[in-house]
Image (cartoon, rainbow, N blue to C red; front, side, top):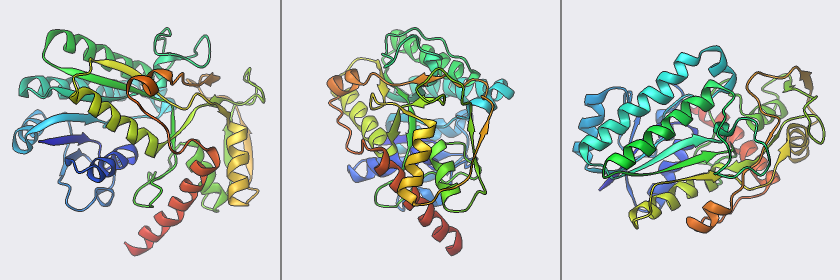
Length: 330
C-alpha cells in the first residue's frame, strides 16, 4: 500500500516524503508546483503535477497506487495574505480539502492526516495553549483550517474514516542532511528571512510590531524544527494504523521565543550583525502563542530530537548555502 502526500514538493511536504522514504514506506506526491519544486521530491517517488481540486486526478491516483493513507499539506499559509484575499484561502484550504476528504471516503481510504495550525486559537487566553482551549481564529487562514477540522470530525462520525489533525506552531529549520529546506522565493517565515538577511540576500529585514504585551514588545512564538514535525506525522500514522481514534494534537515544544530573540540567535549563529527595521503590527498576528505539547508526547509517544533554537537556525543557514548551490547548478 502507498501513502499519498499532497503538497509533497513544498517545504514541510518534502521533509515528510523523506521521512516516509527513510522509514521504507511507498509514497506518491500530488503537487501543483505553485510553491513547491520538482527537485524537492526524491528520485523514485512518483510526482503527479496537478491540483487536489481535480477530482478525477485524485481518484485515479488513489486507485492506481492503492492509497491507504493521505497526508495533506497542500494549501496556502500566509496570514497577512489571507486577510487581504480571504476567498483564496477558503478555496485552497477549505473547499479543496473538502474535495480531498470526499475522494478519500468514496475510495475507502481509512486514514487521513491533516496539516492544521495554531492559528485556530487566535489570541489564546493563556499560554501554553492546550488542544481544549477556545477556538477563535483572528485571520481567514486560521478560520479556513478550523473549518477543515470541523469537516474532518463530522466525516469521521459518519463514515469508516479516522484522522489526526496536527496543529503546527512555527515551523523552521531544514533537513539536517541538507536534502531539502524552505526554498520559496519571498518567503515570510521569520527564521528564513533573518537567514537571508544575514547572508546578504536581503538588504535588511523588518520586525512587525514592537508594542505587544510581551517581555520585549515583539511577538512570541513556539518554533518547531521541521524534522521533528515530520516525525510527529510518522507517529500519527503509526497511531492510526494501530487503531487510534480520530484526534487533534499540538505540534510545538512548549517554549516560546520572541521575534527579537530569534533575530539575536540568527545574528549569533551567523556572526553577522545585519540591519533590522522596526515596523507596525501586521493584521492577524497574535501577541504570543506557545504550545502545550504534553498530549502529543504521551499519546503518540513523540519525543523531539531537534529542540534547540541555535540548531534550528544553523540548519536553516546551511540550507540557504545549499540552495544557492542548487540554483547555480540549474
